[in-house]
Image: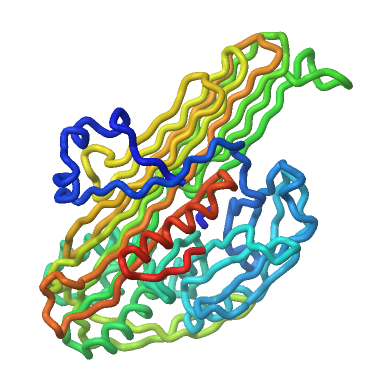
Length: 486
């Protein structure tokens, strides 16, 4: 996705936590995760990374960055899109070249998402059928006027099948309507049209998903809840840049380059930054990448009132289809008890610095529920050849509305030297998850909801992929939920 842990040493734990005993940590909702062996190995990038996903020329268009390591790049790869029910909807072959970007257009993808599900996924496999990455993506609508709507896509995250995903903007808008109307009845689409007209398409999709679920559970006028979730990446997409500068006006046979750097910044807190110098002349490089990844799990508790269905023209696959959407009236209500949210956070990073004048720094933190201090924070810097960290932590919170996690990371490399060779690099990754449940929290027997596992992870170190997947699966299994992480 977008797209080995050691126990935190006493000197690396925030001072407030160091002052607490193990029992008081548990009472506060914090628990160290079991240690996993750290790996001091070359931070090789993944063979392939999704750098952009969009709807273009009526098709799902993906752009994929390939590793510069030729031995990691297959001669042929296959990209397949699956709909929200797990069915194949489009695919195509690629012939990648190391260090280059492949563009793939999947005509036939996105077919009738109102029937097949709004949460879909891409799978890229090598010539042996082994997956190189799996990327969930969310399909939505953009309705600029009353003449029709267009399909849009955005990178998604791991959650139960046919889950309701809210974009960051829609989630904020729904929260504002919740505050504005309280327990007064309101028409969702009319309220969005008045205050957030640019979100009318997303509101249509949300209404089409949530109304049938609440009606099945309670019938109209009954108060009940659905789990929903949101992910936020800043920056939104991977933004690669690479530059090489030569001495004396340009490259010549046998002449080494003076300096080179490459920056991959995003999505979210993921990044890799590298710089090198091969020259006796003085050079200076100072490059930084930073970002955040946020994951929310929310309860939307509503009472449904009467509303009429209406047809909306949707443009897709070169044609216009009339699709029926509900126009419900809603009333916010409160669940009868508190939900328990179990959080898992993991951050890892590695930096390499070699040669005089080369330095590198990687810093990361994880905060559940906006803690004033990071409950998990690590940094590695200076000019030692290799230094790395890989830590995990769990946290427990309670709420009748929402919980969230935020990973923030910064990587920086500098070279200021006249040494014949100098190099510096940083790479990183993370995993975060939330498991929501009502079990054991005093709920009446008439109120029940299934456990709600959501997760988001990514890495710029190929060696960490399996470890992150297994770590997330173990976290859910330890809490009684068996989830296959992709």
